[in-house]
Image (cartoon, rainbow, N blue to C red):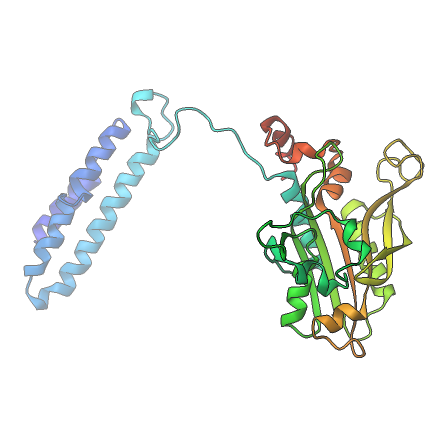
Length: 340
């Protein structure tokens, strides 16, 4: 066997090839399953035990030499231009595939989640088909409360207690029921409202809501968190203002505006010449909501906020028609390849 090994070494050192096809034939001759080098490893099983160590080392050296020599030949020919001599990747498609991209709503959603993650918020999700308790009752909507008319809801005909969620606040109630503070979450997801479809409204859209509950949480904490978000999303020069408002589940409540990122607050058609654009609603969590979810409102306080992802996407990418987000027009989606 030693003689066979030495003869093969001499052969390998003198190998030549004029194209990559010949290199492949040499690889098959020496290193394939039935190749000359591989066959010696089969014979190695019959070698006496006292010779195995020496012959094993020689065989390994031979195999390494064969692989190195064939690689050298292949590399020396890799710069050739003859089509018949070039390697062909048979796994490639016959025609180029167009480059895809993430949906603009996904791009903005991920960016928003990333900003809030820097402040310690984690993502929580819940079902889109919900019950009245988690969507309304637990959030301080009495059965005959007029605030229920603020959101035109899709109810299930056979199950009047079952509905399509109108906001992702239902995720907050589920988290509060199962966890004691501190709680710091954002809840992104799709929501549904019975509205006529137009350039400015749709029967389904996307929200991201936030909730922070702990000891001694204040309105100042809320304002600072939202200011940080606005400046990270729209630029360091962005200003915010809070206007008193009303929501059943927060008290006090506010709407937040940002300085128009198109005109820099000077006034334009987009901001209706006010210099401000509304982006979200917010407030301190009403004690009734905390108690309904099993959290002691005398010990803990918290804030909540919510905004439409389409709204933020419009501000960031100047999309004028909400319907474009759900029509899957490839020409529209192609505009966001560079933004991914």
